[in-house]
Length: 448
Ligand SMILES: [Ca+2]
Ligand SMILES: [Ca+2]
Ligand SMILES: [Ca+2]
Image 1 (tube, helix red, strand yellow):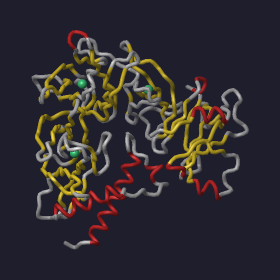
Image 2 (cartoon, helix red, strand yellow):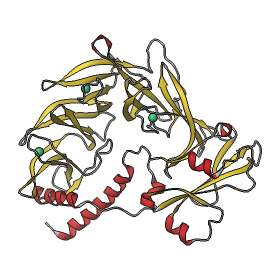
Image 3 (cartoon, helix red, strand yellow):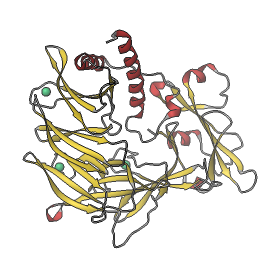
Image 4 (tube, helix red, strand yellow):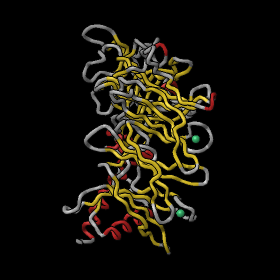
């Protein structure tokens, strides 16, 4: 073992990875623009202790694996897994020694006499940890791990119960998509799992509930067979209070859509697909080109689903086209419009469009870096009929030290205040479309 130097190097890598993950938490799009302006945060003291213990006990050169999706994306999941009252830490890692096959390991560490020790360590299938979820089943806790294979689209769900000494496997099944949430409203977590179709069986979703130490199927619904891959899945509600799962999905490599499954309480409870019916296939305004995922914009647990239309002057299939995102809630068989926004995912913000802007206002990059111009569109060689608004993302230190921002005003900030968003309304803005600075602030929001 080479000791300190190696560990230092690993720690450095860990801090960088942790920084990236903190920023990406819950975010469907890479915010490369924001990240590039931010300083990296450090590992917490507890995380460092757990990491040191893991390195010491495995006696190997190891690489930590971070769950790539879901709520738990840090290197260590610290949670009370068993009947003993203190927290355990769950870590995923691979050996980096050349002579060892690089299977994924899951280690459980416990704090014994004030020191973290590895109390359990198993190897898992797959090449990457997709997610790690804690399932609350009344008084007990299960750990659900999604594993992906680099070779294909299928993933593997493994659910474990930890007894203090052993990790018992309670369930194992491959899937195309899955989410852990309470679907049937009994305050216990369930699994909604989508399986891809075969020649004999069409693709379907099923609801699994945990009862008396076993997972039982409580309902099943056919899913859209034209979907080739699922990207993100959210649990939430419909506007009428019904529980629902929203599945963003790809149709091939150029189109996306969203499929919605819900739980119906009548007839003993069953799972239903609200957007797909094999006998009457519909198209929806959220059938869209790539680049937008469902999100709960106003934190009311009713998910907003995006549709995309090209801004004036752009074609949808044009490289570098700008899109207007229209957000919808689904109810009674149809998508109902909530609002339309310009979403700048890489700079982490969005601007809601007033009704009079839709179809008349377009967007382009300005000559300044990280700056967007909103303008009244006209056909012809010069599409900018009237400049309406500039929005720019800059480091706060640049904003404070430079004299180049005459006419700009701070409308928001991010990254713990390290980044500010500036707006400028040109003097010549068409009064019919001009937003006031107050309206800009009201329509602007951070988008994660
Ligand atoms: Ca415990
Ligand atoms: Ca449940
Ligand atoms: Ca909402």
